[in-house]
Length: 342
Figure 1: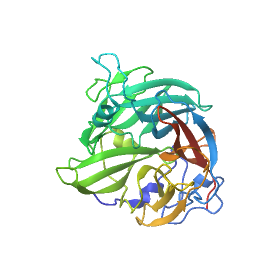
Figure 2: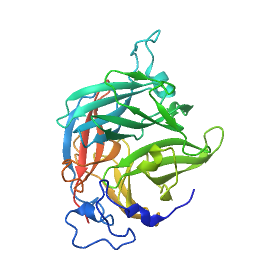
Figure 3: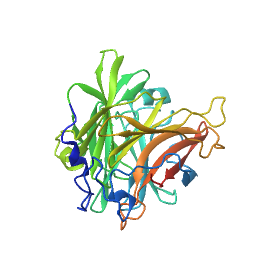
């Protein structure tokens, strides 16, 4: 799996608008930042609050987030809380067992943070990253699936695509779940969508030992239309740089964005960082210590995604990330964003 036809990354904005060449020939007279895929989010700019300490359908820590920019919906993923018994289950299931099996709860919210639906995914994975793809009047979710237990958690080894249906409970072999295998020799597969440029970014692990040790995490970029056809021909493929505790990723134009950090221990501002990687070179071009909303109690970075707040202006995007907060047994989710460019 090697970088292929890199200039195709700038082949066009979703919807057909023409772009400059990715290698640096973007127009200086762009009418909006997203017109030029070489422009990148300013990670040093102050973060702003999109949603402030909202309740999700479950009470566990937020794991990741995704946007349906067409219908104005936000989706979050979290592990199902311990002690819950779902229809068809013989007894309540512990939180440790939920984590080991990879049982997830997806919450649907409107842009005010009001919960408008939920869905349970049993045996899918840890929820590190996922994506939402609006289609017609609904939305399809792209997630990891076919979880394999490792280190106390279940991690997906394939991708899944299925329609979000409020109240539904699905398993990897449910008929409505379409499973895709990017490559036979990889695992820990999670994904995100660049909604402006019509790409999918895949994080995967290659070269792990049978016991789960070793291996290298990498990222690959694809045309979303290719992935829908179960065709995995990467436009670019880069190694994950050295980071702290990995918490999320997304892509916009020429750049890959990464989130890492932990919840508070002793430092009041935590250790959250945002990192930007150039798809062309694989090099880190920016890394920023994030102190936004430092006063949150239990401030754990979780999830990274691109929002396009106004569908009539698809090139004005936001880089959004989440903080899990609140007390155990009643966690809340805060979503922040940066919308300045350099």
